[in-house]
Amino acid sequence: MALTIHNNLTNRKEEFVPLVPGKVSMYVCGVTVYDDIHMGHARSMIVFDTIARYLRHLGYEVTFATNFTDVDDKILIRAAAEGIDPLELSARYIEEYFKDAESLGIGRADIYPKASESIDDIIAMVRDIIGKGHGYAADDGSVYFSVRSMPDYGKLSNRRIEDLESSGRTEADANKRDPLDFAVWKGAEADGLCIWESPWGCGRPGWHIECSAMIRRHFGDTVDIHGGGNDLIFPHHENEILQSEAVTGKPLANYWIHNGMLQVKGVGNSMEEKMSKSLGNFFRVKDVAERYDSRTIRFYFLNTHYSSPLVYGEDMLAAAQAAVRRLWNNHAELKACMRDGPEEGDDAQGLVDEARTRFAEAMDDDFNTRAAIEALFQLARATNRMMGEHALSRAGAAAAVGLLEEADAVLGILGDADADGGEDIGAVMDILIGLRRELRSRKLYDLTDRIRDELAAAGYALEDTADGVRWKRI
Image (cartoon, rainbow, N blue to C red; front, side, top):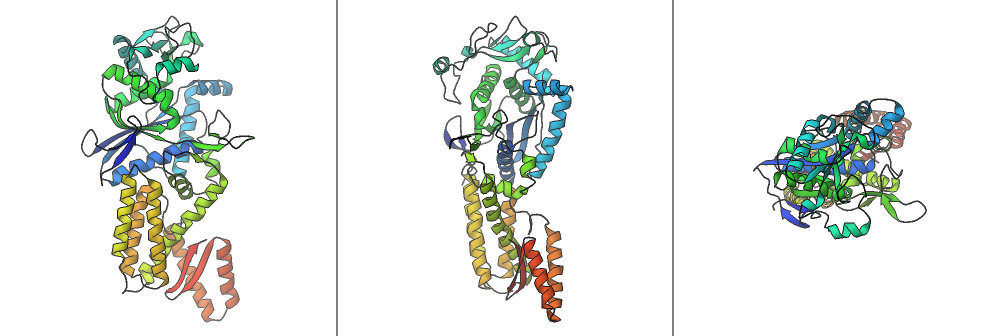
């Protein structure tokens, strides 16, 4: 089965065919770094981290870029309030971003372009927009993109100019020739904020232009995959398309992927609303990560299709923790079976092959991580039953462990036999089990019971089986 992606530009699933065989270019809109990231950001970060992992799993050479908006009105306002340079503020939160990303098990992207380091590219693109008749300089030193100069505006969001005019979403501005137009360069005369010199006067870039300029610099005219939250479809991604395609005459991206929003319950009613800093209804990643490990948080997000909305709740995180522990325990018991299980028995090859096929089919179907996770649970249920019947051979356990770890290289929900200690906790548990066995041989049952009870209080259960004592998380 070939990889298919739901392309939001065409609103249908399409077979993925990269521009260059064997290589994938992927650009995902990142964060504006004026505060700590919240769980809404985490969803997008985990979704696209998983997509990049799966593309690499398929054998593609992936170049993954996600940007930092480190020059923005919110940054300027907060920096002024703190009495520091705006880039000092943004550098602080970029450092915090990387700490939080690591706490979520997110690998580093290949490129992290910053708006502040892309000014020459932005100015060059603004020049081209004006030179091709799609933009104009205003009296206050700003430069605006002329929306009506492009015939297919709204093709990503399915909005028509007529609808925008009647919706009240246009912004009246004496410097604009048309209320629909948007700034690609903001002149200092508009608000007194002079940061960079340009051919049109001192100022700073508009928000939308930075991504167009960054893609052009790092990937050329067209990127394979462009991603971000679905709240960016309009106007941000729509305006990116206008800017880039006005200059190059080529598609900005061949596949557009958007994750659904993380929502929270609205105050005083049952309606959900997007988690965002502007609404004040957000939960910082660093706070949540103090209560739940990265695998639980990843499981929570990946157990829902990336494009669907998801309501945030502590009860849902607790349920995710309980569910993913069943996989951790299955993994630990399979590893124990590899060491202590029967030499003869079912090698489970057919079962493992079927699970591998189901996992691949799910991921190939628009990165359906929910169905992929279910394939792993089906394997866990079957192997747990076989181990309970002492029917699974050591070779069969090894085959199941191999698939779980192969899948986990994509999902990042399993880790090793224990989410918090890996091989180290396994070695410690083996020592405790051996000590408990020795104490039992000496009939010191009060001490053996104490070891069992204190391990249970710490979240570990010991189970006596025909193949010896095994441990698992509870």
